[in-house]
Structures are given as C-alpha cells and as structure tokens.
Image 1 (cartoon, protein in one colour):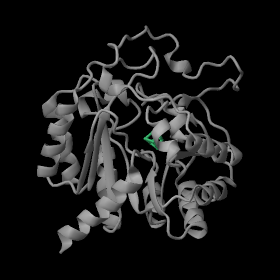
Image 2: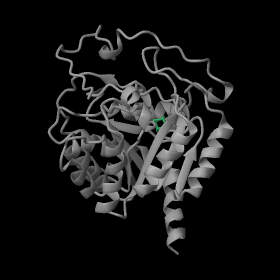
Image 3: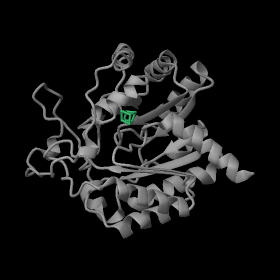
Image 4: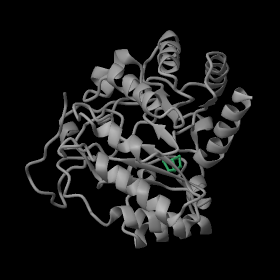
Length: 319
Ligand code: SF4
C-alpha cells in the first residue's frame, strides 16, 4: 500500500507531490481538438470563486485542475473537497497535493452548508482527500457535513464522493447513516492498472464498498466512474461494467484521463468521441439507470441535471 507521510512541515518550496519528484518525465501525445475548453473568465465564474474563497473552502475543481471549471463555475456548480487540501495517498493520475494533512476544521461542515446556501444549489457534490491518518478515515466529518447541509438547505440533494475507507471498519456505515442522496465512489481504472495507477486502493474492496451501500440503504443511488486513455483494453472496460452491475450500481461515468504534470501517468491514448458513445450504448444494455460517457465527462459534471434524470429513470423502472 502506498501511503505518503510527509514528516517535514510544509514550506513554500515543498513540492506538491514529493513522492513523484524523482520519477522520469512521462510524455503524452498532444491534445486533440475535442479536448480543448474555453478559459474561465465569466461573471458567474468570478462570483462562484468569491463565495468559495470567502468561506475558506477547497474545491476539487481547482485542486484537480478540472477542464470543466469554466463551464461549471459559470453555473455556480462547484465540488467541495473537505478535510483539507492534502491527501495521504499517491495516485498516479491525481493532481491533489500529497503529504501529511493538518487537523480537521470543526467548522468546515457549517462553512460548506453556508456556501451551498449562498450558491443556491439544488444539488451539491462533496468529495474529500483520503485521510488514512484518521481512525475513521474522516467518516464522521463526512456525516457532519451532510447533516449541516440538510439543516441549512433542506431541499438541496446531496451527492458524496468519499474515499474507500480501506481498513476503516465501521466507517462506511457512519456515512451511509447520514443518508446522502447519491453515494459516488470511482473505481478510476480497470483492475489490471491498479498497482500503477491507484496503488493504495484495492479494486474489489471498492466494488464491495458500493455494493454494501445498497445493502444497507437501497434508497441511496450509487454511482461510479472510470477514466479511459490509461492503456486499458476494451474488454477490461466491459468487465468493469459487469462488476459494477453485480454490485447494483445505478450510474456509470466514463471520461478521458488527462495528465496533470509530466510526473504523472502518461496519456496512452485520446479515446475518440464515437468510442465513448459505443461504451454508453453497451452500458445501458447492461442495465445501468444512467450513463455519461464522453471525453470531458467527470463524475461531478452536470451532477444536478443528471440526478434529476437518475431519479426519473428509477421511477420509470419501478412503474
Ligand atoms: S466537472 Fe466537477 S470537478 Fe470539474 S469543474 Fe465541474 S464540478 Fe468541478
């Protein structure tokens, strides 16, 4: 298991990913036209940024360098990242800072709830860094954040993307008891790539985590996603779909992997849009209630609209 523990306190010169500093550079092919997005410079973007900063919040939109930030923030849709900006894992695809995180901010749940209120969000997505240093992996903090949003914004639906809580017995149950509307946990890649891409995680643990959510509370929607372009084979993607359906997962997202820096995993291939459409068609035939597959699909992209469609799809199937 790769767990990064930075015993040296943060300095301005500290690298963002100390564990990757000595890796050789990995080169990706140039981006095709279908990946390019417009620079974020709208009034809506500026307003969202102001609310995020005023409440001292961290967003995965910024930390992960998401290409959709201009579009999402213009619509006042941001994905908050709780429990700090420093992750105890070292995934090969992720741009979130790694090292030893600080103490939890006890007021953060209230601040997230306040920002949700100010942004007027009908649907909020909350994710977090991985917190292997905490006994419960941050489960209680997640639950408190859900409860704070419910209290401040009773009509807002809540989608969470928690970590996998590997070796954190009882943590999942604490989060599920807080009753998020959507429990999203990304598999990120196919199982054969876990050792290189997601070394601190275990593929079948993540599948089982999603399955447990449904066993505990079948009313909660479950969602998962992978990135393509990391060197996976088509048959492996189809196997992931089958594994997720076995775990009764409702919603699948598939997007193109983009390399944050040359020290991260290279893009092996830019998957053309028609291949994404093909994956989407196959996934629907396998029984997912909702599928989003496109080069710029991210698990929180259009999450509000997608949640409404997800709810409608379940209602239609139950008729
Ligand atoms: S897709 Fe998600 S992470 Fe990216 S900008 Fe939109 S809300 Fe943020």
